[in-house]
Length: 254
Image (cartoon, rainbow, N blue to C red; front, side, top):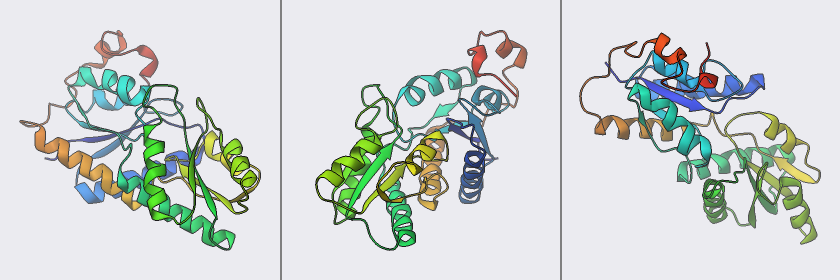
């Protein structure tokens, strides 16, 4: 039987976010033939710890576009008691840039034509290396586009999206588009939609086929390194989890 695949997502209070991640999970399930579940770090249930408690030994793929605190600290800490394999996240991969390019082109077509400059808007991180995924996406998208491409961050770092758009307008560009370096709708995508002076704002990329293919590749690579069959379901008792000895109580939930 294929090893369980768990998508570790940040979570969002916006209902559309869950629908987009569900579409991604369906695509990954078709590509891999694996049982696929979603565990959340915040805002939504089920929590990652709750999902892993029933799937010890699973392959955990962080659905994160940067290597900030969640990817480097939170997810490994939650996964460790369940003997799960945690793959790299999605940061810096060429598939992400191709998905960004597709969504940007769709937004430009809807707006009536191509942009003359592009802002790649990422979530933002204050952690060293946390913005590398966005910066790498800027580099890769600049190769695919004949126009200037710069980075912006929705939180924790500068410049912000509105500042970046205004900067490009100040340099004489009039059709400034935003490539949304985010996986799902949420407060950041709502803020991007409200940035003044944008020609087009692309949709997030979480349910793009390129992202599903990247997740499937992460799963296959992890599976090739794992030895032996998956652990028996329920090996880590919920009572032990609830005691706080396995993970923090604030990451548990139905």
